[in-house]
Amino acid sequence: MLRGLEPKHRHRFREKTQSTTLEQESSQVTETSITRKMDNNKGDPTPVPRVAVVVFLVKGRSVLLGRRRSSVGNATFALPGGHLEFGESFEECAAREVKEETGLEIGKAEFVTVTNNVMLEEARKCHYVTIFMRVVMGVDAAKEEQVPQNLEPHKCDGWEWYEWDHLPHPLFGPLHKMVIQGFHPFPL
Image (cartoon, rainbow, N blue to C red; front, side, top):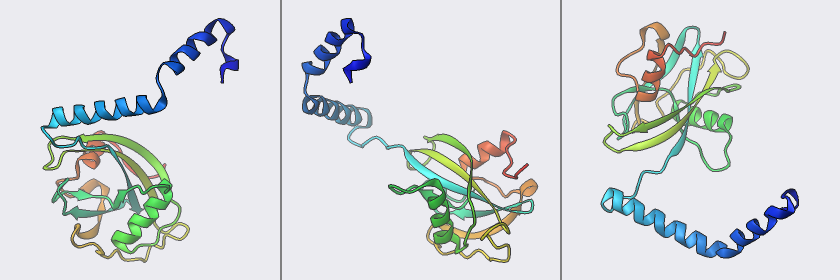
């Protein structure tokens, strides 16, 4: 590791690495982090950023949306999706979440964009890094004739296809911001 450093700089690196042990540094960081969280939130832990994967299921000029039942974005229309699980790829998460929520088998999911969403106005404050994927229905294994089912009625009122130019309101915050910025999910 020190080979890449010029000899005159190696002693500085050694001095810094020998000044505290890894255990001491880890302990100090943990104590500082916990103290900072407790001070800032009066005993409530700071929300931890989470990663969500959502999927534009595209059929013609329509997308599949469901009305949320959640402490975050309740009663807004959103894309199917959910939390990225440990070790899961974006594509795997997209396929799993769409299957769990709608019963639909999807083909190849492609990355579209990513957004950073800090939602302070929600009943439950949260921070999500949201990965947007796209699946064009009728291509590969994504069969157009599949009918979405509401497999998680405690999380969603149901799934419907909506024309992009006639989307329902209100849209879930991250999706709404993309729409008003002129975004569309259709392949060029």
